[in-house]
Image (tube, rainbow, N blue to C red):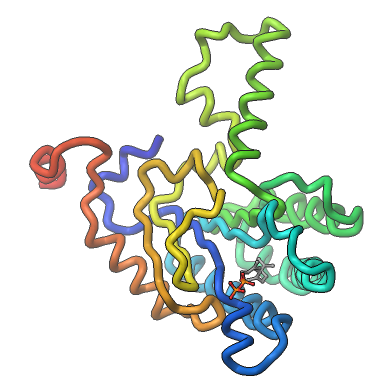
Length: 248
Ligand code: FPP
């Protein structure tokens, strides 16, 4: 739990749902592919901007477990973009001290893509800069069920007692357990939904929704979202008066 950030005005961990690539392309009379390519360029800029701002962690929703239901050619195109993107970007991210991790059920991806993911994680694992997590074939419910299964196995094998299971222990068994919960959640593209993203982690996260379509999201928009966060009073269940006293 990151209750220690009650007084802190800068988010340490930002999570983004990058929505609106398809509509951005349609508005311009272009194929959806061009929207995803533009979204990829935006991602590059936002990762750089977060690293420059010394944000500690950035978690991006690149492909949800529900995205497999898209037309096969769009899924193929996204996979191709991830593969090419990994190949072209990892070297530079590494030079900039970024640590890359993937969260989600990756066994559904091609072995080539799985190898590239592992190679990127391995190459960057000792880096101490921005902790970048990319959610692929990820679903918040899957994450919670996986943690429950792991804990159930530990109980069955006698490693832990049922009564040892509490929020703290559960948190250690979901994805991002070494990064913690996002302080700020951003969703572009106008929808006001969580869409099965980081369900466990978003319990106390500040939620920021913008109509800006993801390819148009830029450093200025990132700063707007950070300014929104800075203006919020995080109470974690306390009263406003209690928190103001702690802030003083
Ligand atoms: C949502 O827009 C976007 C996606 C499902 C894919 C996200 C991928 C990228 C931004 C590019 C690659 C990023 C990485 C990290 C490699 P949408 O297609 O749902 O847009 P729509 O709602 O307007 O149709």
